View 1 (cartoon, one colour):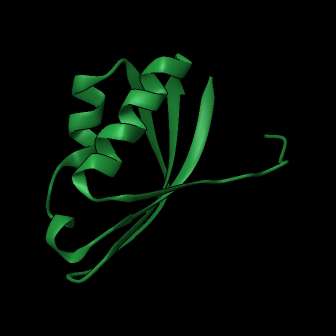
View 2 (view 1 turned 45 degrees about the vertical axis):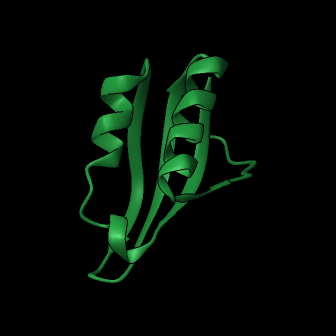
View 3 (view 1 turned 90 degrees about the vertical axis):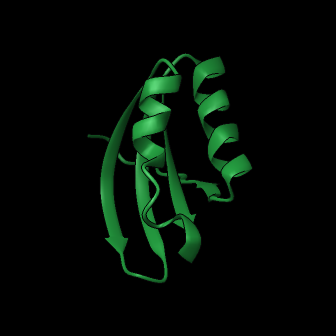
Length: 78
C-alpha cells in the first residue's frame, strides 16, 4: 500500500536523519515528493510504501519523535 503524509518538523529535529532511520527500521520505501527545509522548520510531503502495519509503525515512530504527521487526501490518478 502507498500512503502520503505531510510532515512538519520542529526546529530541534530539522537536522535529524529521521527519514533515513524510518527506511532502516521499518520495511517501507520512503519517497519524498516535496520538501522545504530551513533552520527553523522542515515541511515534507512524503509517500510511504509497505504493508499497512509497517506504514503505521513508521508513522508512530515519527510522531513519537515529535514530528507532526498529517495524511494527504488526494483523488489524483498518476
